[in-house]
Length: 435
Image (tube, rainbow, N blue to C red; front, side, top):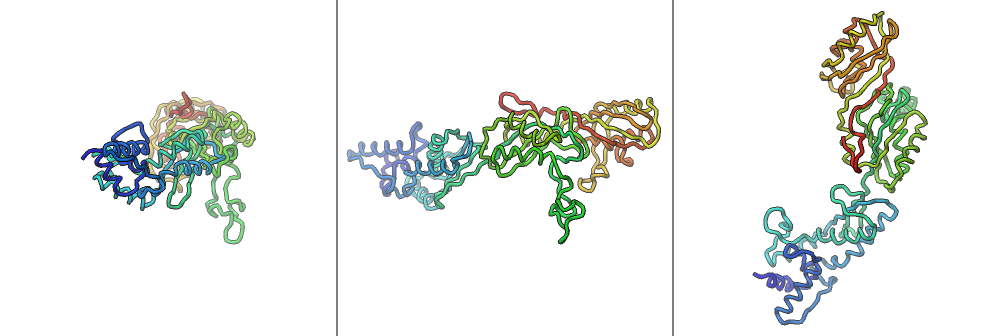
């Protein structure tokens, strides 16, 4: 059966608008809208049959029930839902009423074109579904109204046109800011640390929690609390999450090149921010306890890259010994650790919250400075996941080899600094981040 015969049969089912008629044959021609394609078919049938051209108004269409005449209205409603939101990319989705889906199925059955096969990667093409046309036609109009580009992977804003409920939903996706932080004071965790005794409530029964003093947290400040609220406020979001490339111990400083992080801002109303000014604002708020640098707008993918980063790290540790040692003995012990492969059971200080297992880690470099028979400063460059405190103390034999074990005396870290996180997460090239 010819294309014109198919068009005759569809037109004979009742009033079918140009868009619904043309949509069934969307795979037969390109460069036309479905309405233009349907109108052309209707004219061609009229000429072939030597009949008068009889247009059908969209409002009378039994298939879409007039919806194909509402593209402009829905686009305007979508634009109104995000009137004061900054965004550069968007996508439109449609919830199609079941009745329209059934009408379309019945229409296609007249000419044996299965709507489930529409634009299928395998099998015969069968035009396109109503939903796809609605997404595209409303989407084109939205783009013109808001001056933004369509993005199918992860747009800044996702519009959902719900035809049955007669509403437009706008989901504002998160914005991301990447940088590195230095933690210049000790006893500041990376993220909020709720009290385990009261589960963050601040109370034990009717009384304030003795363990946290009623605050609900074990520490008054965190890197997250000193940075994320500023970013959230500047980007006018509803919440902010802090994602770090690992974390240092609470009592350790993070110095040198800093640690990579990403702050995720939920439902931001502003995206086009001055990152240099934002960096200055964060540092002013942190007031010397934490510093950030290299702030850049980032993408969703950067969160996973930062969290997956298995970077090597350089540490500086102040070490105290339980008995006198000689400078030569310290040098010999550090030489043994230099390049060593270390086996570490889960440290006793964290085994209450981490799975018990044995890890193998490399020590790339170990050096130190003898200060007096009871004190030294040690620098270690090791693989990601190396427990440096236990490398010094031995942790009652849980770490082998260790500085304490090689010296034959007790040893403990009294102050620890992270000097470098040796990853590529901070590079920024041609507008993209690389890890």
